[in-house]
Length: 363
Image 1 (tube, one colour):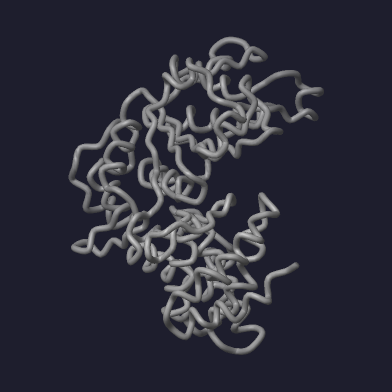
Image 2 (image 1 turned 90 degrees about the horizontal axis):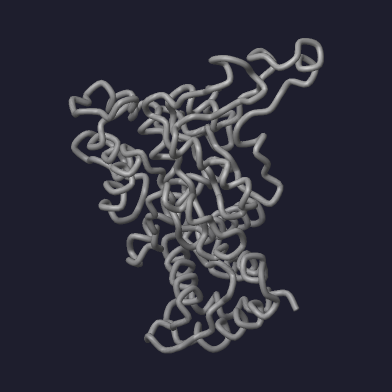
């Protein structure tokens, strides 16, 4: 068993190690200082290149990738904003893997995030015995990224308190991190070529801890939108669900007709419109592509491990309940109305199964 097979979710640089190695060997383009790949080759790694046998990994506007890579080649950081579940984190991971060869210098933002988790902390046993020294210093992702010239990922930056966010001001503007406890040259860490920051923020979190104007000026903002095309979203959900099911020990692929019903249901509940373009109940919870993949995975697991089959539209109802009732109890009632009033207008065996299984909703 290889190392990759023992991980639930290997980072991008392990999952796509062969592609990155081949692209690096064939890359003849000019590279920004400190970058592992040229901009053109990094773009091909993310959006795919059939001629070179590189699979597409991010479904979205290719021009977004161009702007993001150019931003990182400048002195500004990159902030990816958008609805939850629009693959902002995946995109930041892919970019970091392409630019730096590693995507694991990651800070997870939250209410409990501290500056120590961003910059550095201390080995207190060594600190007590030796005092402050480079040996007792424990570098956090930001310090490592600056010292090694790597991309640092800051997930959910607006979930952090303002004073914690602003700890990025000096590293992003002056490209230096001071360590007051150390003397001489050890007390200043200067960023090497290749260092920059990719941050992500959900539009639903705006107002939680909005960024200061000073910090905003140090980032270029790029919005990641939901997938607009039904067929594209369906193909993505099918590919991702298939991979997740295989990793979970399910030996049959998901049914295409079941996934069509699932994706259509999510899109209608997300937009608040029915198949005819008329109004329908819109759920307040996030009905993203990522949630669609999660439900598709659960449907396949439920069908295979309970009945030895790929899963049907009836399983969608049972798996949707936990997704619909996350933020607002009224969403469960909206989902019930959708199944009772909107689904009967659709034709097909799976749509009838979806309607007939409405009794599986709790309450």
